[in-house]
Image (cartoon, rainbow, N blue to C red):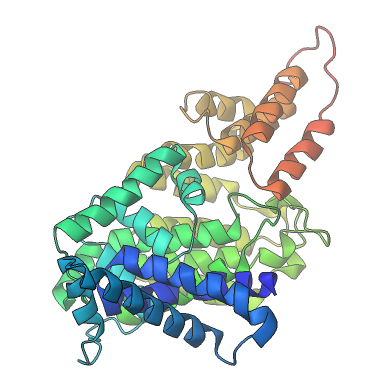
Length: 413
């Protein structure tokens, strides 16, 4: 039963918080009420059974508990509680406006321009994605206390500045789009490669991100980056079943059974990429979608057009000059120009706290015959990998690294 409650929590937490934020106009009240409701579910459902509508039960229970709490606080002349209680008892119809989905509405609301973009993304990941503060910190590559402070400050600014919880007007939507897209993609990334835990993939988060992406595409069909993000997620999702073994082990892209890829998702994603190409307004998500479209074109790893992928990465790095993009580009450099050229690129990056930095270095060093250095790099990667499936893959590859030979020369490019 605890496992069943956990499944419902993962699936419905974001929706429940969204509804309660609308009801009470306060993030902390909504989060605490929803958490109280799930605590009640753990206590009552084993005896009473799971209700026919678990989400409805959670939302109703959370609303009632929040109202009871606000009544107690309002009786102590707490003006803030009185105001929240009055809002909760307001019988006016829920505002719909341009965004008709509760969770999507809350994403746009939290992406208010008065908040810094990192705070917007972190807060909505916490509320909508149901991600924990440590998971969000790993996604941003920052310490957990830093992320916790960022989320608290964002909530405080919304409260102190009295930022309204309402649907943004049509004219406000494009200005908030960059942050909204970042939120959706980070939710998808956390689902596709969980930052911690025993499972590599959280299918619920992938599905939620794609659902939100489809809603965005319906809402803003003329925004090419919206189309690009949806295409990118579909093309990556098409490989999901081939990414793990029967016992949950991770399989690298080059070793995957491409016959197991979802051809329907690939076809849909490639159609969207072609739509983006016809618009000729390239953006980061469209370029990443195009890179994944090239991968999906190849019937096997050996026939992948790495030259085209490198050209796309060159364009992406010009548009988005981040260390992560440069690291991903180095993988293509290794295939086109050789591992030595790629290693020079990697060694210039300041990503020593990122496990993939060390994993890619280890692979390049192995290909160059520098086994002792490769083993050390694998050790650094393993120490920083919090997902059990990724850690197991790194350990397996580390064990497969050839023993170093005394005075052995480096393998030429």
